[in-house]
Amino acid sequence: RKEVEQDPGPFNVPEGATVAFNCTYSNSASQSFFWYRQDCRKEPKLLMSVYSSGNEDGRFTAQLNRASQYISLLIRDSKLSDSATYLCVVSPSGGSYIPTFGRGTSLIVHP
Amino acid sequence: GAGVSQSPSNKVTEKGKDVELRCDPISGHTALYWYRQRLGQGLEFLIYFQGNSAPDKSGLPSDRFSAERTGESVSTLTIQRTQQEDSAVYLCASSSLQVGKNIQYFGAGTRLSVL
Image 1: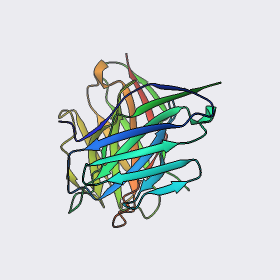
Image 2 (image 1 turned 180 degrees about the vertical axis):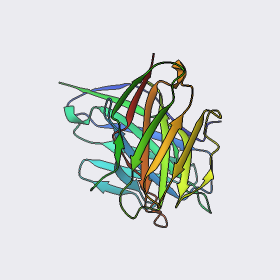
Image 3 (image 1 turned 60 degrees about the horizontal axis):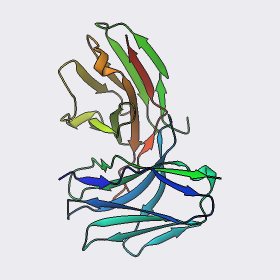
């Protein structure tokens, strides 16, 4: 089983739609969780951290379910500019500082 | 500078040549990471530095790959005797290793093409 798994998509949605991505992780001791965004031929950039209580940033909502070991990202009122690949990132606990990146979920928002 | 800087941004080389890729992390960031990303693929971890030491080199694909970091700052990734399968974007990231907030900041990458 891969350490971090994501549905590669692509998710093809119209402008204004609500779309949700899930990510599952295998290491139950994982400590920190993030969503990154990667535009085509660009570097990944932090979108938002994911907290146990869930957190929201504008149109974006991230949630963590430790019992089921998954993270979700909800995007409301999709914009054309949201088209990108969304990477789930899980950081371990303990002495390791090497995060694990999922392969990403591709989102295409069309007019 | 304000962000992670990588050079060159593009490198075209002939098979068998050596190449050196450079990364300037964000000032004060303890941790530095190198990744490889082939076209259409996910990030592949190569090596991680904490200060000038590399506690984890497990991702280096072969002994043709090596990396060093000096002054807890600049890092270079060297690929010897390049092969066509080395063609990829090489990304560098740095982090301040705050507890519970290991946020990585990426450079724009070096796009390596081996002919």
